[in-house]
Length: 440
Image (cartoon, rainbow, N blue to C red):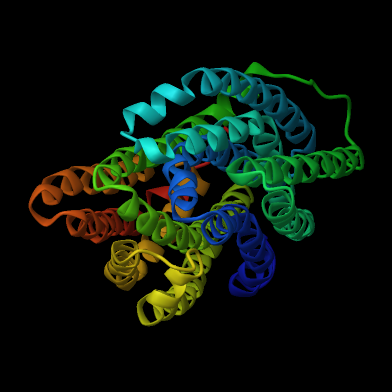
C-alpha cells in the first residue's frame, strides 16, 4: 500500500473487506431474521436482548484485531520481517489466552448480566440460552479476528472474504435446518453460528500458518515481551474504545428493555440494520488504519493525506446508499425481521432508522479521521473523540427518555456522532500524526 495511486489502492484493498463485513454481519442478521420469522417476535427480542452483550465480546476481539493489525502493518511496511513473525506469534499466544479467560468469566456472569439489564421475563430464558452458546464460541471469534489482522496487514483483504462467504452461506443453511426442520428454537440459531464460525476460524488459521512459513527470515522468538508491549500500546486503547462503546450500548439496552418486549423487538431489528451500516463504515476506517500504518512505517506521510480524501469519498458514497434504504424504505427494512410485527415494534423500529440514518455522514468523517489517528499511533486523540461520543449518547438517552420515551433514546445518537466527528477532524487537521511511528 506504499506504491501507486492512494485512491486506487484503497479501493482495491477496501472492497473485499466491505464484502467480508457484509458476510460477517449476516451471522447476526440471519440469526435475528430466522428467530423473528420462524419462531416469533419474542424470539427476536430474546436474540436482540443478548446482542449488546455479544457485541461487548466482539468489541474486545475487534480491538485486538485493530491493535495487532496496526503493528503488523507498520512492521510489514518497514520490511522488518523477523520482528513481524515474532509479533504475530506473540499476538496469538496472548490473544488466545485472553479468549479462554473471557469464556470462563462470561459463562459465570451470563445470568447476572441479563438480570442487570432488566431483561423481560418472557424472553429471559431464551436470551440466556443464546448467550451461553455464543460465549462457548469466543475462542473461534478471537482466532478468526487475529487471522484477519495478519491477512490485512499483508495487504491481502481477499482471503478472509473467501472464508466468510463459505461460512456465512453455511450459517444460513444451518439456521434454517436447525430451527425449521429440527425445531431447536433459539438454541438452534446459536449452535449454527457456533459451528460455522468455528470452521471458518480453523481454516483461516491453517492459511495464516502456511503464509507465515513462506516468509524466509532468520530464526525468531515465539514470544517477546517487548513486542507485546508495543502491540498493547495500540491494542489496549482499541479494546477499551470498542468495549466502552459496547458497555454504553448495554446501558442503552437496559433502558430500552424498560419499555417492554415490543419496543425491544423493534429496537433489535433497527439496531441490527444500523450496526450493519456502521460496521461497513468502521471497516473503511480500519482500511485507512492499515494504509496509514504501512505508509508511516515506510516514511510516506503525504500519501496518507491523499488516502484520507479518497477514504472520505468512499464512505460518503456508501452512507448515501444506506440512508436511502433506511429512511425511504424503513418499514420494508424492519419487515425483513418480523412477518407480523406488533404496531409498537414496527413504529419504534421505523422511527429509530429515520432519526439516525441522516447523520451517517458525520459518522463517516469521524471514522476515516480516526483511521489515520489510530494507524499512526495517536491513541490519545483517538480515544478522546470516541469516548465523547459514547458518554454523550448514554447520558442524553437517560436524560431524554423520561419525558420523550423511546424517542429520546433515538435522538441521543446524532448528537454524540456530530460532536465526536468535529473532535476527530480537528485532531486530524492538526497534523500531529505525521511524525508518529510505533516501531521506535
